[in-house]
Length: 177
Image 1 (cartoon, rainbow, N blue to C red):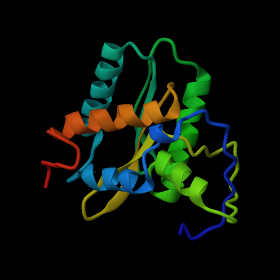
Image 2 (tube, one colour):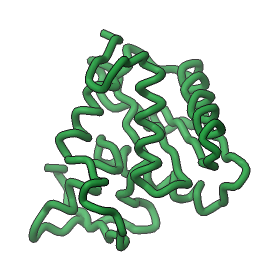
Image 3 (cartoon, helix red, strand yellow):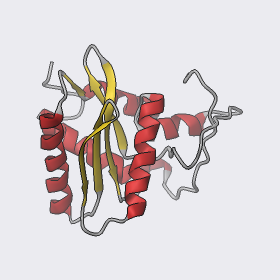
């Protein structure tokens, strides 16, 4: 599916099966949250929304937003560590390489039987928290990454903020056409 052979070393997760979203649901999220355009002003607005949401919930996270490899927004909240920044970088690398959310890539690869995917574990980690920035008619142009929580919670924070940013009344109802 991905065109190259990679090996992902999966860390032992303690998630219940009910906590996992299906690969199809994760792909649908990528369809639901596509921008008409993306620039540094939008990155700032989205980054500030993620900060506000995390502060309201009392959760410390690292936020990183990249456009075509250019870091447009980065914030490390009090209570985060350099390890969270490094994990955000690795998750973002997964989006850059595979053009899908880091949670989707992890879910997809965990369902493969007998396939081996080789990558440098110092550069990639297929855990939730990095989501592709997709511009309609263009494709993946960057990533929105959150790190500092359990990886599914990182992903959920990004999705929740995207829903608010896009003004969605309910999942699957994208008002931006």
